[in-house]
Image (cartoon, rainbow, N blue to C red; front, side, top):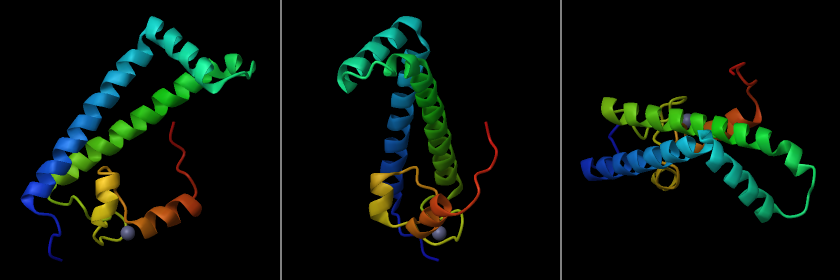
Length: 129
Ligand SMILES: [Zn+2]
């Protein structure tokens, strides 16, 4: 299989991934900081309007968000590893090339569209976390 990505494109995706990585790390630090956390909760309340029950959920929401960030970070790290090992841009499930447009949208994508759709629809979720 001939690689679809030029060294320059790989470089670009690598830079993009690194940038996303530091953004996520920065957000994570902010969420874990008490005062920023409270500020964020207030901002969320202001943004999302009038639902009083949201106050009860705000802690959970923040934790969920931190979890999601952790998952996103892991995906980015894995993408950077694939970049380093020369497997970047290949679906980890079927080995097909991941469409360039998809990578441009989500450079951390590990699967082609077909495999991702299958995974989201069908497969039982592994019992992590
Ligand atoms: Zn695939």
